[in-house]
Amino acid sequence: MDRRIDISVIIPVYNAGTTVVRAVHSILVQEYEPVEIIIVDDGSTDDSPLLCDDLASQDERVRVIHKENGGVSSARNAGLDAASGEYVMFLDADDAVRYGALASMYRSGWDLIAGGFAKVSGQSVLESYKPADEEEFRNANEICRFLDTVIAKKHSYMLNSACFKLFRLSLIREQGLRFDEILRYGEDKMFVFSYLSYAEKIRTVPEIVYDYILQPGSLSADLTSDSHLDQIFRLLERYKPVLAALGERYAASGRVRELYHTDFVGRYVCRILTVFARRQSDLMTEENITLLYSYMAEDLRLGVFSIRLGQMVNILLYKIGKPSFTMSVYRLTSRRSR
Image 1 (cartoon, rainbow, N blue to C red):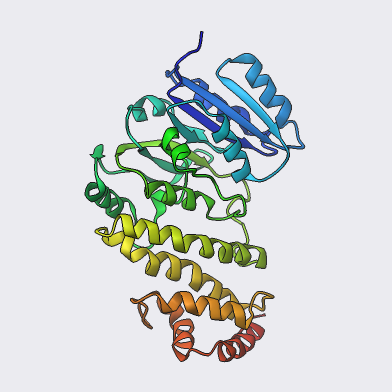
Image 2 (image 1 turned 120 degrees about the horizontal axis):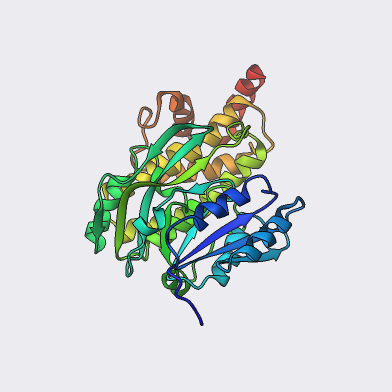
């Protein structure tokens, strides 16, 4: 007999043999039965495939998909294709869902149900964020209030991740929403923001429901490498139309209106320019600087002191408006910094 499934938990796995059992068990121990766990083994080369199959053999709620390596977005999309619940939740293989979270979050009929998260290192919680209250937002105007609440002054921190949320699977399929398999950075934000452009009913749960468990060395990623800068360029190309759609739907949201200035330009464009100013990069070309300046030209709030004091020189160079001159300056400053 087919059983009811309220929530499909999708867990992408790549060489996560040391953590995947903990992640899966964090769902299995929940006192919430209408759930399925879809583990997507993304071409792992360690003992993850055997561990995943063993977990599936022990509990009928666990299914395993083995596929060639394609990245986390490809794995999540495979999970979406296989899901059968009313909602989907995304869980990374090195994280955990807190006990009681699924029961606290699940309510039928909502497009998005959002809880909070904590960053955990060992036994210590380094930081945590959660909605202030249990609230229901039932139309575009009310969702504007939700967005104004959860979008931080500088960044959309609560919306940057696809985790600690329940997404209505039928809405995902109706709108053909997918994770962008080209991106390895910012793909969660693009999915969440794209989804929000269609959401009509949102519920918040004022609880920490998800633990980001920091692994040794997880804070040491190089955010200035050319490979990372290339990903930011790819993200900017995709972020612009997504942000435009979100702004059109929620024009009354002051925070959404500010995102182009604070997040798109202030966070991403300026990060690239800062790297160009500090070290020599193969991506520092006149064409790329011209592209970045075209993005900055659409930021009507951009002024010399409107971002951060450390960006003053970059913005002054933009105001001069000659990418060739900017390149000459950056060549000098990057040499001195090496």
